Image (cartoon, rainbow, N blue to C red; front, side, top):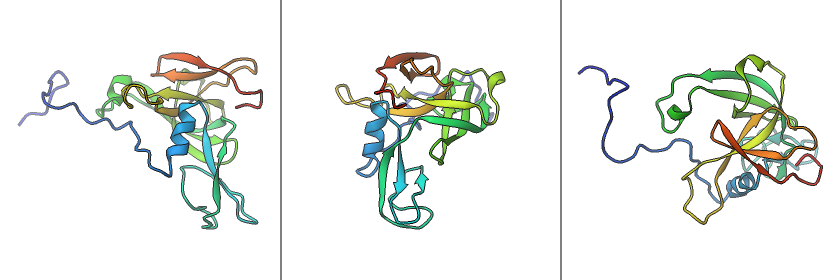
Length: 183
C-alpha cells in the first residue's frame, strides 16, 4: 500500500485533539488560574526544603513531603532551549506549524515545557528573558464555561503594558494587568 499523501483526506469522526489537558480535582486550581491569566506552581512547605516545582505533583520531588501548596508564579522566565517545529501531524498542531517548542526556566526555579510565541527565531538565544502569556484553546470547553488556557511565553512586556492572552500563534487579546506586583 503506498504511503498517504498530504492531499489525501480521511473521512469519519474528527481526529482526537492532543492539546486538551484533562483537569482533575488536583489540577483544577492550576487550570482555573490559567483561565484567569495566572500561572501557578507548587512549593514544598516542609522545614528545610521550600522547593518550587512544576509540573504539579501532590508531593515534593526533592524531599517527598506531601506538605506542598499552590503558589502564583511571577510569570518571568528565561529560555533554556527551543526547537522550531516544521512538521506535526497531530491535530491541531499541524495547523500551527511552524511553531517554537521550548523549555524555560521560571524565575522561581522550576523548568517548564511550553511554546514561545510572538518572537522571531533569529531573536531567540539561550538565557533570553520571556514572560508568560495564555493561549485559549478554542472549542475545548462547552459554551458558558470558563476558557481553558495554556501557558505560553513571549517577549517581556513593558512595566505599564497589559498582559496578553495569546489566541493561536498569531493574534492576541488583552487582559487587565494585576496590581503592579508582576501578576
